[in-house]
Length: 592
Ligand code: PEP
Ligand code: MG
Image (tube, rainbow, N blue to C red; front, top):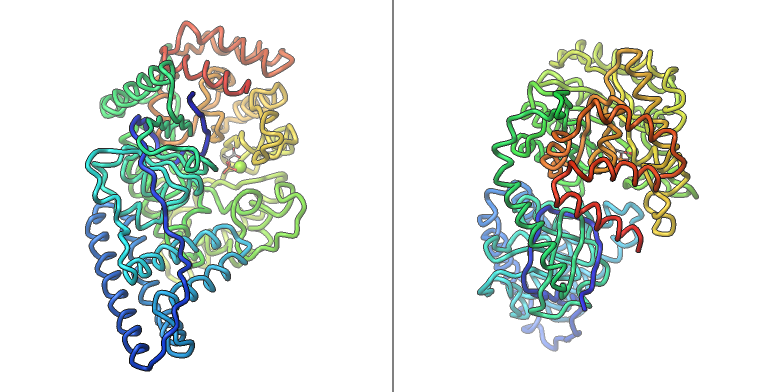
């Protein structure tokens, strides 16, 4: 009997292969006490040797990953941690003062550091403990002489299954022997996920209990596009996913051919099909996938690549400059910091009972102008390197937009006074993520240059459904009549005012939502980069002459089920088989 799991898609692609279970050793080791001063000297020496060995291991991994910027950065951080003089002397002091073995001293110091990390509220900073644990484990393994590189001995390709994966283990993996990675822990922005994406290996993380359920050698299907993992699949599942894999591989090969052509409907309406990105390095891939510009650059994640360092003006400037130069002359919509809610809060008290209704997005930025100014300075400085647009999240009133407009003018004058080079003040747009912004769009339009609908939050706030809560997730539905009616209002008012309007929420890549979104007349769809080829194909079979009346008719319907069925009837004759299969499967999953 097959077992299905759903986790967070971390790196796209489909793989089918045997499971390889990786156990990560515990870091606690038994206490061994020393009797003589001579023994203490020996332990200090052993510790030194282990540091040396670990250093050369990390250096050789760094060479292996020399073509992956993220991998190199990660290993550099590990080498810095390994060389940290305060940690080294803490271990040496324990050996000397407590007269204990080197491995015990390392494990005890590590344990203390991890305890301190666990007490940190900010989940982002707390997550950085994986790097410390990773380096510590390597040192202990070298002291004990245990083999940490079990994977290097693999003879044939496998799907790696682990509770969690140390970042340096991921970086050290051979791409040839790895078909995919599945882990119980981690998130889409964990190091494992970032590295798997850079290596082009499908990965699904946050599966909770897959490692416990998997058996070595058992066949596993991993669908890194949708986040599905199946242990011991049945014939029907093997058939479905073999077709999906084939299609994905063909699509990959075709991507290069289709990449040049713009997205357009069957009756010739051009649609801007852009990408959502979270890391500046992702920009390098957008053209390969056939994307036009960037419809949403989430800037909260920039600091992730430099662990332990708070984000600052320079870090943002460098990231924006890279993205703008890469995409030039196409537009790049850079969203200002959207902290709070589900996105990590650094140094922000978490006393709120309802963080999604609390201090988040533009509210934090306006209350903390010292930090926000740094981001706006970086944006103005970077603007001279390409076609930048600035977008504000969580807008509920025109005064918020006005305040940022004034800030931008003041900062531009300040940069000029300082003689710092800058670009023109970019277009300033808003995200429509709250019913206040959607229903009040006519009030906001005179103050904004463009609009992008954030359907994830718009759905959450319209339906009063916490988007991260497993208890109410089945109520989260962007095809709800109240959501599509707001999208229609926003699109119509923007058109009347001659303002550009796009959408950058998850809905923009939903095969059943796309006909409606085009029917309401949106100028742009911005989707996760890897879904661009699929969405382009869907757009190409749609006719505006059909979807304009279809979208209007949907506005008269009473439930999302009715709307979904109505659109499905329309697309049934149009979409390629495999996309219909996916819709079908998604329907089955929704019904579970
Ligand atoms: C949205 O809310 O739809 C959106 C794109 O923003 P985020 O998912 O980053 O909150
Ligand atoms: Mg949002």
